[in-house]
Image (cartoon, rainbow, N blue to C red; front, side, top):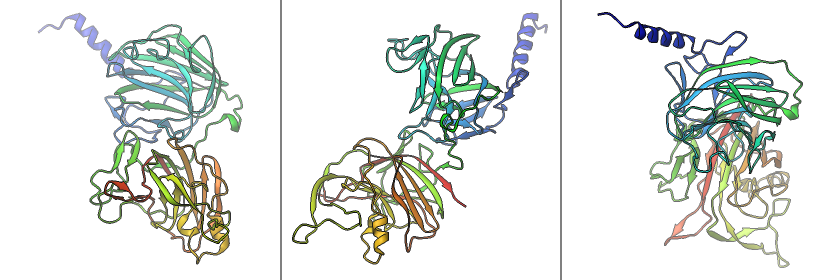
Amino acid sequence: MKIPRSFLFLLCSTLAVRAADNQPPEGFTALFNGKDLSGWVPVNVAPTTFTVRDGMVVIDGNPTGYMRTAKMYENFVFECDWRHLTKGGNSGVFVWGDGVPAMGTGYTRGIEVQVLDNDYGAKGKNEWFTTHGDIFPIWGATMTPTGRIAQKGSRSFPTEERSKGSPEWNHYRLTANAGELRLEVNGKEVTVGKDCLPRKGFLALESEGAETHFKNIYLKELPPTGATPEQTANPYDGYVSLFTGRDFTGWKVPAGDNGHWKAQGGVIDYDARSEAPGDKHLWTEREYTDYSLIVDWRIKETPFTNPRARQILPDGSDAKDAEGKEISLNIPDTDSGILIGGSMQHQVNIWCWPIGSGEMYGVRRDPAMPPEVRAGVTPKEKADAPIGKWNRYEITVKKGTVTVVLNGKTVIPTVAIPGLPARGPIGLQHHGAMKDGQWTSSPSLMQFRNLFIKELK
């Protein structure tokens, strides 16, 4: 059978394109080899969120999160091809990002280059969300927008809409130099952001609910221009995630819990109603010795009024009235904590008492503890965000000592704690009980996310 010349030409052209995939042009390095994710670090996602298929990075969109480069970059030219497999799909390229997400989010602080299908946000298009190519700072980063600027926020909008809709491929070329970011879409520059901060950090690909493909990911480094430490992202060297964002792999869910501990949308959610007959806490499967732990947490609501709350003095004792009786406070309260060393006594508290979170109740209330220890585990200031807002703990456990930083403030300076277990799992605390449909103690109505650990030598 004679094969038409037009078909042979099309076949050869297709093979030529495929052969060129993931082969960098002169002067560029391939950031993706087309076979595996070597050189990339999944940050806060499940093992199947970012995979490789047919020479492409395949993002399934669940959970929201990101995968970053193993190396930080300052000045560079970055190229990639992308396409959406879903109408209205959403993704992004993060530039100059941190090593872990910003507090309470699934995404890094940095500059985002929007990757949107042109079916997204058709109503009011180019007023807030666009089809492609916005450049804007996220989660604490800053940037001066230029050209066509968003009516709200700090977004540089593209001067033209040049992206192709799902499932066609698009090409991005980013030039980053001295804090300026310039984007070309399908061969023409359309967006510019200036005065970016940070201006050195990781590159990352975003997972945001829709299947997205990337390939031909290349980079050419440009000469450095002296980014200072203040202009450089935080690498968070050595931290690894304890949570996949969508299931409890690596955790021990209490037997008989009946679904009250939930893993969904990058968040661990708890309603304090576990039906487990015994220990209701959520524990890591692994035990740890010395480590630095990051945990974001949020009190969802405070439906219980606690008549037994206390005013705690700096020495760790409870305030008393003129007759020597402990002063009781009647306040809205929710109670939870981070359990260390596999021990309920050694919890870093989360609650609504005036002293603030970070207090180690079991140690402070132990009369066998030396006075300096009881004072040491009493917060030096209240650093909690308002109810409903996210908070971040940075807890360091090292050689029998504990340090607690809450929202960037050291509330428990390093204190040696007698009897602190040398090794054990890490837990998220259950608290609260009900009777006849009413809470009889402060419930753990909590959410947790961004759980990262760095083991210390």
